[in-house]
Image 1: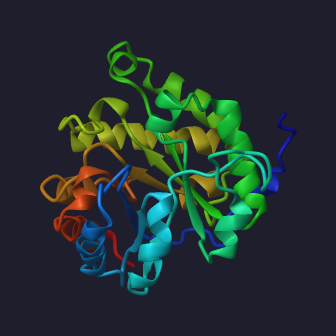
Image 2: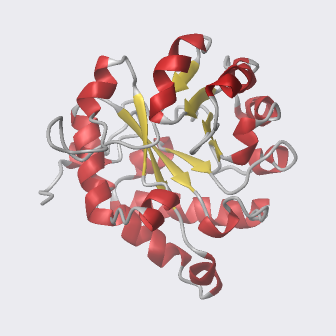
Length: 267
């Protein structure tokens, strides 16, 4: 069970600091051959990371094969982590193991983990508290399904997904990835205006339920089929601080997504 979490997590040491953009590439369960890894690594190494943080989420079995091949500025971020330490947890990876491998970031809460592996809000809150306690930083994904969007329940769903983690939202350690589930891998993308509206609503909720400082400092990525074509317009939206990229992270265009938000918001 999850006990109360200290509100001290929800503080920002320096007010009014610009939010540095952050773009991640989620390779999901790809590629199907280690022979294809070098090409994918090259896509990441082509990125200019001087004005934007960049991370990549490889399959765990591939991490030792690629970790040393990324240039400085490209961070490895596993796609999942256990809710507890090492031991009798078949098929899992612990935060202690990730820290031992000099990994600093981990992705939690992706819609595919929620949908296919039945990870609920309580489980994910437990995971987030655990990985933060072990010194990792986290990209925490939230998002609504198509029918939830169409029925006007977007924020109701997102609030439910954030309620149990609100005391853990330290802008220095947690990035929120808003991924409208209806736009993942479908080719559909929220218009820049719709994406901005939802990001602004998320930030407003954090301001009202955590603190204004946390809302001001926390970075919120957009994760709904971002690509080289739509990234420039999405990047212009004031509450979009980066992207969690799926399919396009397997292509050379990934570097253009990083370049698009670096041009607008790089710092």
